[in-house]
Structure formats: structure tokens, C-alpha cells
Length: 394
Image (cartoon, rainbow, N blue to C red; front, side, top):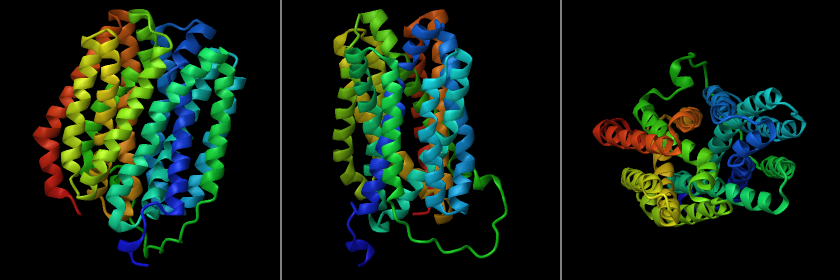
């Protein structure tokens, strides 16, 4: 069977996408309620909450460049399963952590297998895709974690409102991650041909230098989402008196993601990645601006639609652009670079968002997200887009 006649949704691609959804679902199941958990259980202040939760992101971004090197050097399936196992087992640590210090240690260490797992799983996904449909396939693969990013918090909030127990959420995340590990264990990969000779260890083995400008753009966009996703529940409750409605916010965001993925698949199939990236960034900026400029239900839910639509267009486009700047033996590095950028942005959003919220109020934190997002967009149109056209390899 030729590459052009191979179907996009082969068994391995379905399994890897499902496992990716489950790992991100387990992650996002905890994310929106951890600030409330730390406040209710340990009496933590907003800036302490930001510092504790940022440890996870910092650990992930430290691990990702090395994980890109590992998946490009060692058998990818083995690296994938080892990373998934440790990601799964760390959820048990939340149940055992009885102090704020112990919780902070467990949360930070958990970021290491998460960072390595996201790189290895996405690289395996690229490996099992037919080359003729890789650009389109990356877009659909990204839908799995985008859907988890939206539905995970929705389920978490509704589940917590129903049972009123943080422990149930920790158990649910533990079980879901275990199912994801089992799914990935059934994936079958063909052995990669050995590369003759040893490549010298250089910066490009850990960070895709050609993608530096795109990296900086994604840091800006991750910052905006880091502020929004971390402080949304508390902001909605304190400012608008919205409690269960935060679950609806993420559900609407999920609908926006799905619509944009379906609509954008055709453009990606035709190679219009720059078009999708440009449109997605601008739509997202309008959404973030609406969220903070109109602090009522219309602005609240309208922002969810726009941010979902924007991120759904932007993410697969940027991932494809980064991969198009890399050689075939740098796929892991390209994936780790774009994910590290998102980690750095979210980490900065969590930390600085906590500081802004504590000293200047929540509105200032969300306005900082709008400003940083706008700077990222301006730099993209001024520098990144032309750089991509000059240096893309395919």
C-alpha cells in the first residue's frame, strides 16, 4: 500500500491520539480546582498558590528538551511507555501528600514525566501517520489534547459540585492515566533504521534553533492561557458570582475547538498553515480582550467561543510550522521546542498572574494576558512569518 493510499485514521494513530486525550484529560481534570484545593485545605494565599502550581510547569519545561533528545536517540516506544508509567504513578502522590510542602514537591516532580510524555507521544503520532497526510494528521492529533483541555475542567467542576470531594478527583485522574498507559502499550511501531555514526551533541539536539521566533510567539500565547485557565474559577466566583458556570465555560471552549479543527483541516491539508496560524491568533486575542473588558455572562461565554476557535486554528498550525523547520531526525526536538514554549508561557502566566491578582486584582492579571498576547501577534507578523517562509524545509 502506498503512502498516498494509506488511511489517516489507522489503528496506531487512533490509539496514540486516544492515549494523548487521556493523559491531558487526567492533567486538566485537576488544573482548575487545584487553586481552590490549596486554599481550602492549606489556607494558601494567591501568590503562594501560583508559586506551588508553577513548579509542575517549570519541571516539565526542563524535562522536555532532554526528552526530545531521548526520543530522537533511543527506541521511541520504550521511552513512551516509561514516561507514561511515571506520569500515571505520580497521581497517587496527591492522595498521600498531607502538607503543603509535600504537595508542592509531588506536584513539581510530576511535571518531569508529563513533559517527557507529551513529547514522546506526539513524536510517535507523527511516526505512525502516512507522510502524505502528516500535516492534516497533526491537526487532528492536536484536537485530542485540545478537547481534553476543554472537557477536563468541565468534568472536574461538575464532578466536584456533585461529590464535593477533592480526593475523588485525584482518584479519577489516577485511573484515567492508567487507562491511557494501557492504550499506549498496545501501539506497535516499526523499528527505525539505525543512523550510521554519532551525531555530535549540540544545542540543536535539545532546542530547534531555527524555530526560535515561533518559540517566543508561543510563549506569549501560553502566558495568556496560563492566566485564564488557572484563575478563571476564582475570578468568576469573586467577580460575577459564577460557580458552576465555569464548567460551562470550558464546555463552550471545547465546542469552539472542535468547530475550528473541522473547518481548519481542509486548509491544513492544502498546506495553508500560515493562514490558519494568523487567523487563530487574531481570534484568540479578541476572545481574551472580551473576557476582561466585558465582565458579565455575555463576555464570559463569548470569550470561551472565541478562544476555543482561535486556539483550535493556531495550535496545529504552529506545530506544523515548527516541524517544517526541522530535519526528519529532529522531529522530537521540534515537538519538544513548541511544547517547552507553551510550558514557559503557562508557567509565567501562573506565577505573574498570582502576583498581579494578589497585589492589583484579577482584572490586572487578565489584562496582562491581553497585552502579552498582542505583543506575540505583533512580533509574529513583523518577524516570524517571513523567517518561516525563508527557512522551511517542506
